[in-house]
Length: 319
Image 1 (cartoon, rainbow, N blue to C red):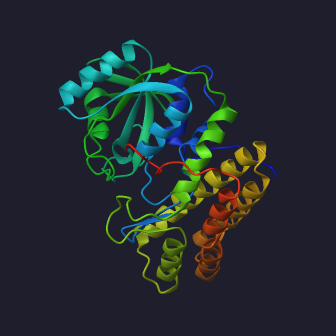
Image 2: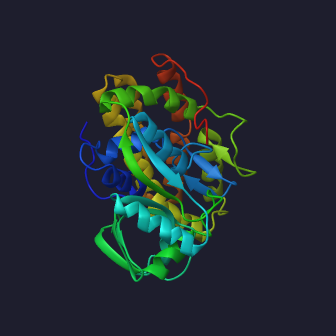
């Protein structure tokens, strides 16, 4: 198995890696620790994301930080002035992880300029009254924005999964020594929990997970119900990040000796990654067939991990 190395939309994992600093695991492992590879969700029956039903980056970040034996200060809310004061204080002690931000309002990026609700995370390096300096993992080291512009993006008014604006993580500290292998081993019961579909998860009405979600998405494509914005999301984001997550999870589990589960994840990655060309070229029959082949594999992965992993408490507990 040749693991993928290259660009990809791993904004929160890349930003967390930068914020943790020296000794941080690579972003590929951080992404696996967040739990993102272990499921599919069709939010409100409309938004397709290759991550578990009820999962979001905020849950994932908190999980990865805890698994690695780190703590941080997480803050949110306030008005823009108070949020700026928090950010200024945070970067006095080192870099800080800001997000979600609305990617459409990050005006240093081409084709930006309007709020889209697409979430993004960055690592903030310095702040003053006029300028915010940050590493944007979407290809922009030492990016700058006028402070007012940054604050507007950071308000993230259209990002659906947060209740308060200006979410910030800072003052990262290691509280216990944890090796990457130990963190991965500890993450697997949570991965197993995410692969299950539970009624106690808070999800928007009409949301579907794993096989049900993929079958519904396939039906939407087959019947022409899929709206253009959703197709664009699949083409530009969902498929490629989903395939990478599965590929990285396959490599991580193979390295930890879970070869059967790794083989399933590798097969999922190949199947999903192979849908990019048919999707872009409008070969909907191939896309529909591929999604329907992918649908049962999440239950197969859950069954495989069940044989080797001891279950823990509910995934996302404490959210």
